[in-house]
Structure formats: C-alpha cells, structure tokens
Amino acid sequence: MEGIKEVKKDMGIAEILSLDMTIAPILMASGMHCIGCPASAGETLAEAAVVHGLDADELVSKINEFIRGKAEYEAGHKTVSTDRESIADEK
Image 1 (spheres, rainbow, N blue to C red):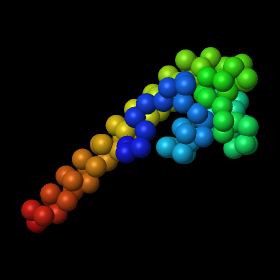
Image 2: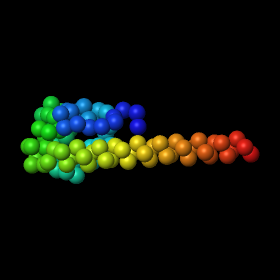
Image 3: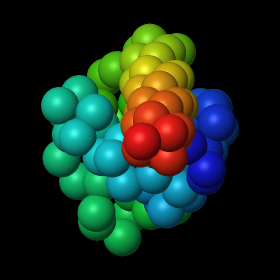
Image 4: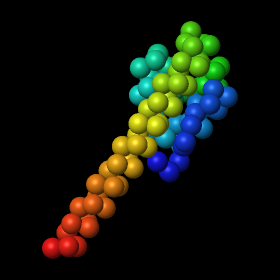
C-alpha cells in the first residue's frame, strides 16, 4: 500500500481518511458515525475516541492490523500477477 503505513492516535481523522478512505468503515463500526462532519475533521483519533467512549489504543491497533492485512494482500496479489505474467511469457 502506497499511502499510509501506520496510524497513530495523535493523527487527525481527516488526515487518516485522506490517506486511506477504506479505514472509514472501521471508524463507523466503532461508533464514529460523524467522521464526515466538519467538527471531526479537526479532531485527532485520540480526541474522537474520548468523545465516543472508545479506547484509542485499541482502535489504533485495530486500524493498523487492517492496514497490515491490506498491505500483505496487495503484496501477495502483485506476486500472483507477476507469476501469471511469467507463465504467460513462457508459453
């Protein structure tokens, strides 16, 4: 994955989403349904977690686990594509 490698709780919600919008469903499933409102754009992940009664460290861990899984999937997918192209070249 190109953009984001790791989320930290002092990162802004808008910053996180601008780097990878696929994190939005994780935030929403955690109860942050207002991630698109102007007020949330200026909040850090830690601040938003406090407002929503969430454990910021747990949320960061969940998001980073997702990011790692996505990166591993994409790396594996590129390997499969390269392998298929090599096989096609051999024919």
